[in-house]
Amino acid sequence: VLAGFMEHGESVEDAVRREVFEESGVRVGRVEYDSSQPWPFPYSLMIGCVAYVDDHHADAEQLVVDTTELDDAQWISALSLQPLLDEAASVPAATLAASQSPLWLPPPSAIANRLLQRALQLSLAASTSS
Image 1 (spheres, rainbow, N blue to C red):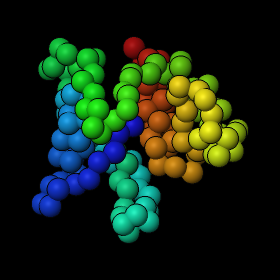
Image 2: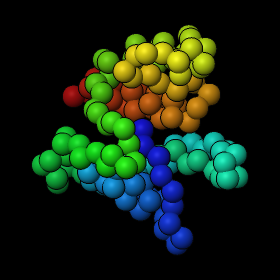
Image 3: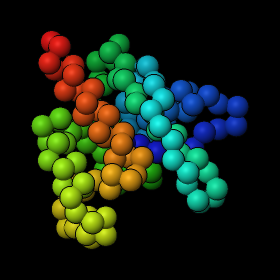
Image 4: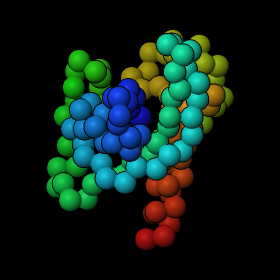
């Protein structure tokens, strides 16, 4: 899950493509709106989208992390994601945030968690249809 800001005059889809590439080096093609959530700082609206890696780029699995924007980025398999989402749903948010785990997920009330749930559903659906 990546986050960024839209530029003046930029579409949501173009903003997603630009931010994903700037922060991770991954080029995405199709972008689908998923949900939104108000964000009080500075009176903004978060727009959650699911983006699909552009198959035309052979290096799609190579992450090039912009360390001025992110501490880390990594691909996570659906099998690894499910237990993390289960933990995020059962543990108070403050406990998750204070965890010493190298990877923790936001609580179910956060748009980032909803996007991860959607990505997991899409991944599982794709694996059962193949």
